[in-house]
Length: 117
Image (tube, rainbow, N blue to C red; front, side):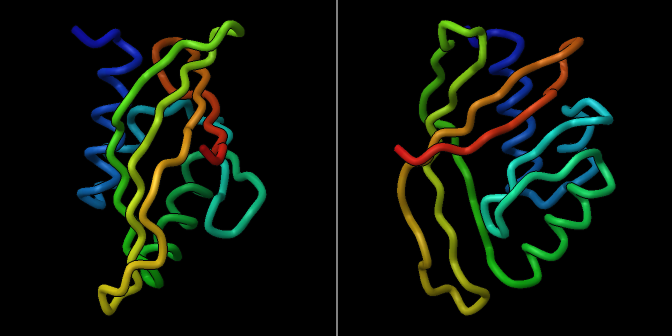
């Protein structure tokens, strides 16, 4: 049985893959801090994430599927993710594992960082 945080992340990943920005943002704190793997750096808040994902999906087609969860000693939740990124013509740009590392506040995502496996 998944923990509440794991269930929330499953909903977030499903919404991202469906390109349902509103449903994905509903899993996040309004002041969420988010890693911009595609562009580098970080963004804050729903409006910046919406703009970032909209730009991203106009140039690439990423899909992310969680394949493992592990709580870190510092309380953050590590998610091993199978990530497949294609260009808009369907050529694979990346297909492999990455780690997404989350913190939560009041039952919603507060931060997300990305680490290479």
